[in-house]
Figure (cartoon, helix red, strand yellow):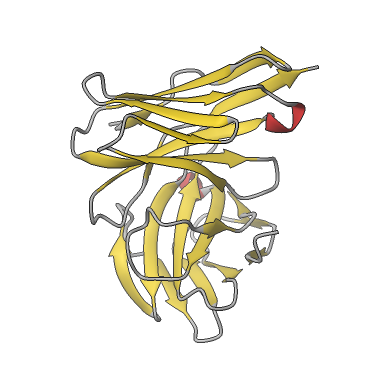
Amino acid sequence: ETGVTQSPTHLIKTRGQQVTLRCSSQSGHNTVSWYQQALGQGPQFIFQYYREEENGRGNFPPRFSGLQFPNYSSELNVNALELDDSALYLCASKTSGGAITETQYFGPGTRLLVL
Amino acid sequence: DQQVKQNSPSLSVQEGRISILNCDYTNSMFDYFLWYKKYPAEGPTFLISISSIKDKNEDGRFTVFLNKSAKHLSLHIVPSQPGDSAVYFCAASVDSNYQLIWGAGTKLIIKP
């Protein structure tokens, strides 16, 4: 039991729509990262938030954006959805803003299907 | 451009025997490597890591070996147990870089 939860578990959207995915981190975890895992591939780093500010970003366009709140929850927003956005979206939290190599705890993910 | 490759999509091993999962990387700047395990409908969980200054790290039944000259690492599980059946991911990072680069995963099946 990692204490990291994500909602919803599954979601279906159509191309061009916008989506918001939610993550609730463990208490005290001030750093959250979001990953996209396409079918048959490993997770790809989208971005990281530390104390409510983005402090690292992978190779994803600006239509992927995020928010982190003081109550250890966070959001991933994706605008203008494309078919290739269909994937499992994982959030992970940890206790410091340092290197991602420190132990981080993953939620179970949100499965997004874009039609 | 896959910087971290796990060339075996799946591996089947008899219970009690050794499981060896392999991972190759291309970026010589990587200096920290991690293995994660993932069960269906759950997020990945950290298993074991190794720094590039070492060539071996052991934790119970799990041992990770790093061969920097070959840009290759492997995870050994001895003895393999049914609960080890899962997808295993290797991941790598560059020092002080916030980003983990992940392989595609290997599905390990432990046969009773």
